[in-house]
Image (cartoon, rainbow, N blue to C red; front, side):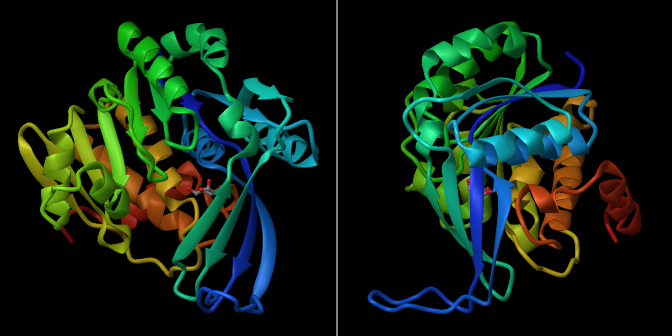
Length: 308
Ligand code: RIB
């Protein structure tokens, strides 16, 4: 219990090109620069939670038996994430993502899931005791949906907080949203999940709440986030920071949210904490490389008191 967070999700090696614009069909463009970073929404959220003060973090995932997988496992271990439930092997290589980062810090990502999509129900069963004993379970859509469903059921049965990040856009299986205590979506994901929703963040948040979670959050990048609960809507602002690279900012948000909720913060205060973590992640290049420390988040919160 406490702030033991279990993350079920993806591990990726991010091959990042900084570009001015997307190439047109048939066009080859020179990038401004290239770099490799450990990423994947699961690994990012696990490392975020750990850096932000979770007592313990366990990751349930898969990597291939290759150099990329070794690099990811080493990075997770270096941050103190338990990788006992990260399976190595199978006939697919470690997942690879190709983030393209623009001059304004925005990004588009191509994801090649590889070993991540070989995660099986047996992997969840093997980790079920760890999930049931955790304080929170974090899920995303970069893993097989049957595994997300199975893990969410284990958590719900055991009274473990379920935070579901609906990234990237994917078909959501019936029943999963109802198992979430807190759903986190960006505007693109919200539009896909609730296509009939009014095209405003408030309308999207209300519509997502109507799909079954106890709380729904729509993240709005530099505009912060909007929180919908049974008692109404709350708009939480972001923090003024220089935007360098937004890859991993949503994952910083989710990892921070889980930690803050398990520390006993109210939802709105937890979203504010998460917005601060997400903002800091935008100020540096890379996914896991950009994830902030607890001290950095605390300092940003102190520098920008609520309501000022
Ligand atoms: O959320 C950001 C992550 O999405 C990147 O690190 C990339 O690996 C993709 O999975």
